[in-house]
Length: 305
Image (cartoon, rainbow, N blue to C red):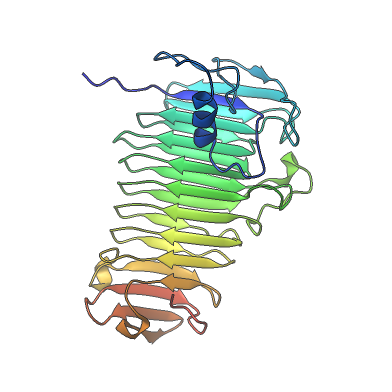
């Protein structure tokens, strides 16, 4: 019988300027320890992330390392009617830097006012992941029709300003928005310091970056008729063979395409043509396999990669 891991959430204040994944950092810390943990044990000594949560508000102590948070309080709430957890840093932004949530199943979770958020979920049912006012993080969901809502907030260009989102199978909905400067004073909320790498996997997906101006985004819709909404910044939309349909009814649609945006297409430029339909709409077609992409916006720049 397969034993699945229930939701485990950990937080703390460890960090480094090059840190991109709390999962990798935790594994490295555990590997450096003497001996092995038994199933169900949690490291509370040298683990970068910290100790696992209790089902109540908990205090998180400061870590004596350069740039670490000052220590603060996380409020934890559970809504049984929605089977949803809410984790909120109620002390100052940057007082509790990190949170890592891991589950083999689908989950409904909200994380507010953390600096770095990593969420790794599995399952075949729908998951909802809400990340509010974060600077960086990584999100992986399972095979259900998942929803990821993310708002960005950063205090400066230092350290990492980057998010990766991979929602795998299912008809997924990913929305990136501007954060709330009220939790961090004069912060940057429009994504102009932040890089986003998004892959929504197989399914009929929606990826919406229209509310921000990303420093850079790399967006892969995957197989299925996807709707992708560009940011006001610099976006690259990535296509492999089979990622979009051969009919207009099954083609991927990109809206808000800007003069600095790119299509990272398979093959060579000579195999692709863009036909102006008027009104700012173009049909981009592969002349070999008839794959089509509907692009709404400005293709006057060097749009092919």
